[in-house]
Length: 245
Image (tube, rainbow, N blue to C red; front, side):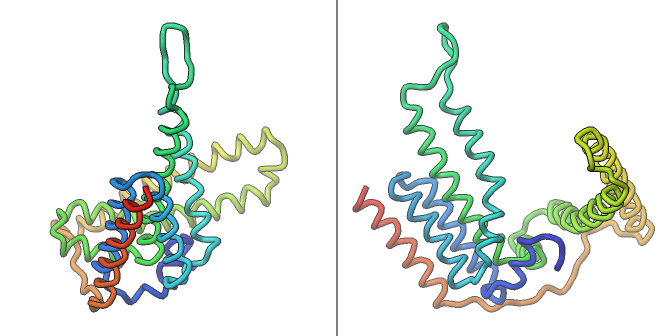
């Protein structure tokens, strides 16, 4: 286990051997459909398609996919609430079309988020980063993403180790101690991450690292059947939405 449930799911996914471009086409197509199609039934169909594909053919664990949706869902709900509140001379109240506006925002966001999670839970970062290079994304951007991704595991390990030490010393036995231990934990993790980033920069500079780090990526063959199925499925989804809307 790497420490990131989404990353573990991506490595274990049945779609792991598929070409990144094939999966990107599917996910981006679903995101575009979620944005441009009517929220009913377009967003519902897009979200349902993403979930069915993730839990079915891609064999992503339902628990992992459900946990990955929780945090984006909290931000979506918070954004929807702030979008339907209006401030006028008489005070703060709900907008006249609050239900329709909030529902549309939540529907589009959840459908698009499910489509993005379909890509995240089936494609490891080690496959995405070389794909970004081939797409001619600036090397500095790819390197920042790569370093950030690697540091996540260092931070998670530090977080786990420090929290276990605090727990063994009864650091979370009371509410007061919990607040204090949480503050110490955050400070220690931030300090370690800053020190690790500084040492990493000094190490690369000492090795004369002035350009991006080149590696030999794994070549995953594209599937014409998958691409044709993707285009056909997206077209059918759009047609069904426009007919039933």
